Length: 118
Ligand code: SF4
Ligand code: SF4
Image (cartoon, helix red, strand yellow):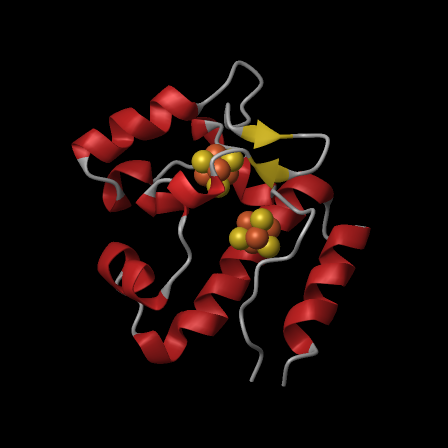
């Protein structure tokens, strides 16, 4: 089974444009939703995203909704811990495909990363 992992120099999930996230209200509380909107920059990227390095500028203090953990995914999305890896990998692939493309180097690098940990 593939094991979820975050890939360095990706950042695809930091593109927060609400137009790309039509179901925000279903997994964010009203205060989190307000926080989320406050992070969206004019170009759709998170204001804390550092484009040169593709890293988070507030990594240790990033919001709960940015944290990929079995507990978080269970409480937000109702994903049982046994399905965490598969679900989280699908989420990353969706973000990577929409940002960089299905056939991008980023996608190939990500699949190598998660499938290489069998
Ligand atoms: S899309 Fe996935 S791999 Fe890319 S930065 Fe976000 S969590 Fe990491
Ligand atoms: S706070 Fe950090 S991890 Fe969360 S979207 Fe912004 S740059 Fe990405």
